[in-house]
Image (cartoon, rainbow, N blue to C red; front, top):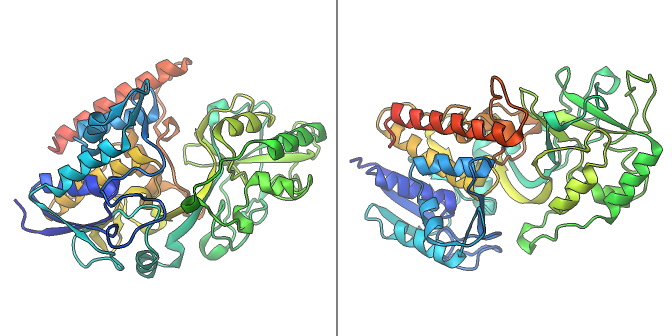
Length: 465
């Protein structure tokens, strides 16, 4: 049993999971939670693990990416999923819960643990001790400033302006063509705003970033197609944010539908400008172009450039499938714009999400650049495992990338820092199967079989059960 005192900052899902897992491994834990001393605009109670925006952890089916991640977490003994099972309400294959029952269960398990002490205080600087920081998207301004001071001004973002991501196999490449504008694409060329706090971003210090060859797919539009797209975009139903979730619209994170409302030619002179692009099959410049940028090294995920949006999910599917070449688009991540404090993980953190100069100070939850209840909880669980290992003189470990959890960590490690944005669990993160079947459900079942076998083997190898 370790005598080391470990600090966990933040009593949300990731922090509660991390504190409990550390205590179960014999460590003394101090869990710092500012609610009770200082509230947030989102929370209604001072209980740990309060759910804010939804009462669902999404699917339980392993042929769904979120269901597969939960199955992996169950192998690791997740407290949060145990609480979700206790509080579950009928919702088909979705893991929906009674919010109050859920938070009471997790709260009681944590505060009554003999090796956990909960302190109600705002932490304003990174502690000089073994620590997991899991303060979530509503991290206090004081602590956010402390993190920025430690990691650098470019390390932390405060607003999420996310464009949809499409699976490569669902893009009709008989329509879309590969080309960079003038053959030498930069973020400045692609119509993204410079110096914005959110949006698709740019390179270090606001400088445009050169793109690798083949980094763009281009969906050409004629005038009729463009006009129809603009009509659909401007009339589509938008998501209305909670007050705490609203983001100011800087030029660099303007929703694509708001840009379109400024004038029918706004997008054609912005992110959809055709200048410098010629369709190699016709030799002509299209009326407008929707560009997709490679999101991962394997080229399995493609981001719709400049199309950050507040449209509701069914509307995103309807409107963006009007783009030539995207009629059968499979969405791996939907667009959104909201307040979200998060780190540029690939630029600022180690592969196990710690400070580069102190591996015993780790980050977990949405602060690391993952999206969603399940993903946030999973990072808290793995952070606890790795901090416990480090204090025992062992190396940190990350699951293999054929698992959903390992693939998320690989994304946080390998994503391009100049374009980094938060990511949720999706099958596009996983390594492709050697001989993938055509049937999507069969393909996902094989992914799940491989992932769970790899996770079980990894747990046995590192004696984590």
